[in-house]
Image 1 (cartoon, rainbow, N blue to C red):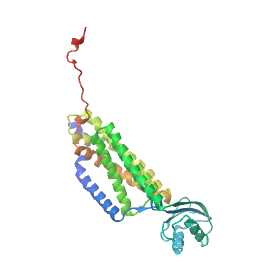
Image 2: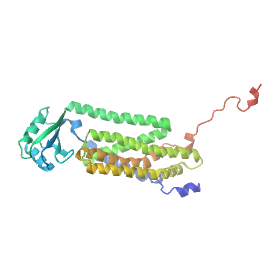
Image 3: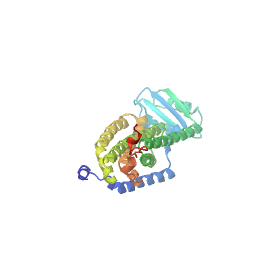
Image 4: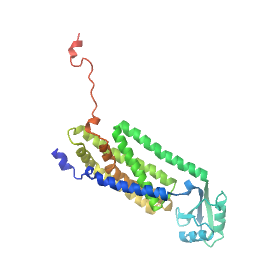
Amino acid sequence: MQILAKETKIDFIGLRSIALILSFLLIAAGIYSLTTKGLNYGIDFSGGTKIELVFDQDIAIQDLRDELVKGGYDDAVVQYFGSNQDILIRVPLSEKNSDVNSSSRVVEYLDGSALGTSTLRSVEFVGPTFGKELFEKGILALVYSLIGVMIYVAFRFEWKFSLGSVTALIHDVAITLGIFSLIGLEFTLPVLAALLAVIGYSLNDTIVVFDRIRENFRKLRETDTKEIMNYSINQTLPRTILTSLTTLLVLIALYFYGGDALNGFAATLIIGVLIGTYSSIFVASPTVLALGAKPDDLIQEVVEKEGAEHPDMYMP
């Protein structure tokens, strides 16, 4: 069809082999890192003590870290969670810090230092059993969300589209987790929540493309499936780019100005939006094509009633 050839500017489906190699390399590197290094679990999952302090003067993070190292808290993580006087300290579980009183020892030690007077705002202790249970529930939430997506897309479209969307979502989660492992970013509860949000964002992007493919399958039945998919992706491309850019602008601002406490959450969403946009174009649709989807799959057969060819035979 000449019209299709003019309107399709980028051969996304033709680039699927290159995209497949890129995705394979990213996932392979991520799996290798996850099996060798693993994830850098925060105390939400590994257990430990979380202490929020408010000092009476501005505190330099490095000075506080150095002071904690002197006191034997080498693994403590220190960050701002508001102003330069609001400090969040995470102390992982160890032989020295394995009970609920570890927070009192940290606060007493800092009060005796030259950093100034501090006020304890809140303390949270996470035991190793609870942290493990929390992590298992988080993984189950991811699995259940993927199953729910598969059922939803299967009802709305067709089973081939369902497998295509879930493949793209698994692809996004695998690459995001792999990047976290490679870089060594802390994996916390907010990061897990961001991963669930990434699934929703990526699914929304994929559904938009699938909707247009379904619409064009019905309009252009005689056209080649690859050409229809290319045409559909190009039609939705302006919307995809605009949505991704506006979302990224907000997330980048959140990453740089939201404070250290939100850095992991924002970083996860930034990675997820980029990978999700990529997968909705180069993973979801090519997977549906590889499963053999064609326009006839979305055409419902009309079942004629007995005697429909001779309607007069039932007339009195």
